[in-house]
Image (cartoon, rainbow, N blue to C red; front, side, top):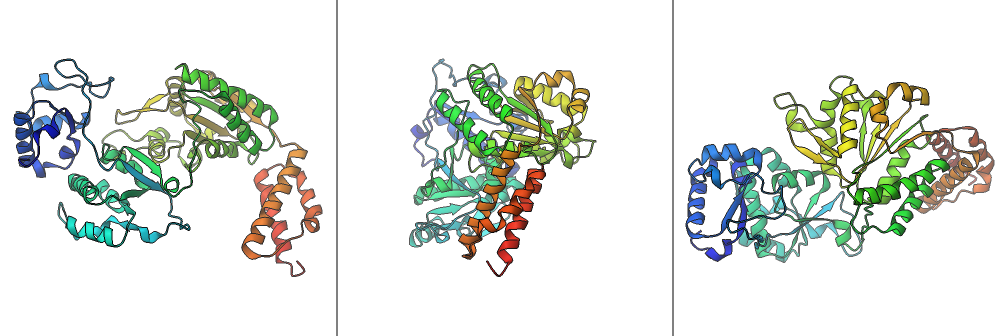
Length: 482
């Protein structure tokens, strides 16, 4: 601390949350840091996650008085000092980006040799210390021309070992200071990184985008609404969905209307409930919406068929503190953190309980829900698709009127028209034939199986039809005379 220029800390806001989360290991050290900074730096501020404040005050009762604590920081715009002048955060946090991957794909200009796991840079992990030599790290990265350092393994460790959080932060910063490389992380670990080290990386970038494949996401709730783009994306969704022409027309109109209502702050969530027999496109619709609007992102899917009737809400948003599994969170919360898609599929909604109906009534009304730990989650801009096998009569009797009135669209999917099924069958067969030829250099004559394919129009379940198309195509593929 004595070697640091005092001016470098002037007008900074320093997040001390991880110091507290690390446990009591650094207590004496932190007292010294606070004393130096508060003594020699005239304008410096500290912030901490609210849930750690009481513990901090117990550890350091003499550092700050109650009058010095602003409990509304981060809840209002800006930050005010004692002279009521807005303070800018002048510090430069490095690194500012982390590149996210689902799996690394080798391309012409990229191979896995350009990625090194951070575990290869650590000499030893002993107790609460990560032992490494920053000069050796610099030499290794430079000589081997490493482009990305994969931090996934270390992030998974700090999920279980909060005592090494500060060590991990220092390691990231030191690597950045000696070598102009990039960090990457597996998408499954992103939520851990955002929770444990929220200010380290300011931007998440798909690694494919860095390797020249640009990913375009469509946000129908952006400030500068472009009607043409919204209509185009609605048309792309409708073209991919087989049948249900009346629904498509209403969906396009409602999506456009919702975009403007959301932009004005009048509606936060666009909700659709689709009922009908299995295999006629209900679930497929939600998948298509997510793929078209948020490519490369995983659809957020909750299936109530996987839950028991008891404790459904706990499974959804987590158990209250003190209950078994309360630290794991609920499925909805975990999946929202994991995926940047704003499309949620709620499958088999007929198996929900009254407590779940009340939960969604409030969520669709306010766009916000509070988990069992008291933390609020804002789903502004999300599209929620509910699907169910309920008949129209059961829907009317089973779903509370208060919840019915909250759905923006209520539809009952009927069988796909014969003409649409014929197109679906032909396209599915031709697509599979092309894939087989591409992979195995063996061509199937479509005309030889055309009659068998045409007989499939008697079936209504599109999933069953697709499997039967596969059976016919593969039967022809395995015949020696092809």
